Amino acid sequence: VPEDSPSGKALAEMKRVEPSFGVSDFLQGARGAYEMIVMGYERGDLAEIQPFLADDVYESFVDGVAAREDQGLTIEATFIGVREMELIDAKMDETTKEAELTIRFVGELTSEVRNREGEIVEGSSKEIKRQKDTWVFARVMGSDDPNWLLVSTDG
Image (tube, rainbow, N blue to C red):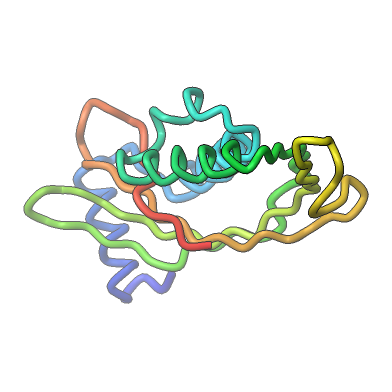
């Protein structure tokens, strides 16, 4: 982001409050978190990813997985990779020191949705689909907890 933009100023403030903060380190971690969270949701294995999700995001994931299970649907997915990733916004509340970074991801994966009988009702294990997501990660800068939480998803 441009240095003199509101996002650039927010990033500079994050670095001032927490000198060890680095945008490239954050983005590398966000890339790994994206794969882990997407695949945890696809597999319905939410316990593994719960520590990285804000409570309301976790609850919406629980609802989504439960709805799938109620319909007797299962998903077999393979994560191919992150094709694109862009930091599109940065904000920092100077009072609470809470920082928010908004990232746009374009991920590639294969996905098969199967019904109770095991028949494929959607997707293909041979066709790579692109999934576009805009996620917001947040944490209090300078806090002892180094983990960023996923606080918002907008696919």
